[in-house]
Amino acid sequence: QVQLVESGGGLVQAGGSLRLSCTASVSIFSFNAMGWYRQAPGKQRALVAVITSGGLTNYADSVKGRFAISRDNAKNTVYLQMNSLKPEDTAVYYCNAAGVRYSKDFNSWGQGTQVTVAS
Image 1 (tube, helix red, strand yellow):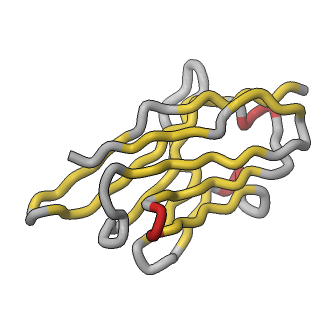
Image 2: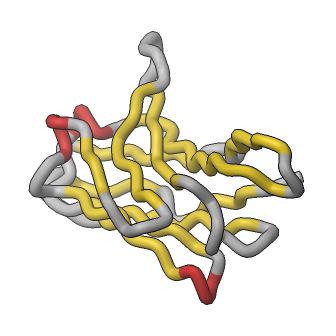
């Protein structure tokens, strides 16, 4: 079973920055993709950013140019650098990993980390 642990959330003023980290319990080298999702109160969980094993990235339109996703296979960690934060970025941020291990598909989620952006 793949376990994911997020860290780096907190309270920040609008215009500030935060970096989220997600560390997996196993090597992420062969993961098909890792991503960050967020869920604001009363809203559905939505994709923020994703990075493939080949390093391709994709972002939600609302964060393009402000957020950057990266991965460090040696540390089994994926990062989300968030700049120019806005109050509407306030949400619980979840890490996700998907792939195949021991010939079985998996799709794992972290426990979430709260990001609050004050205006």
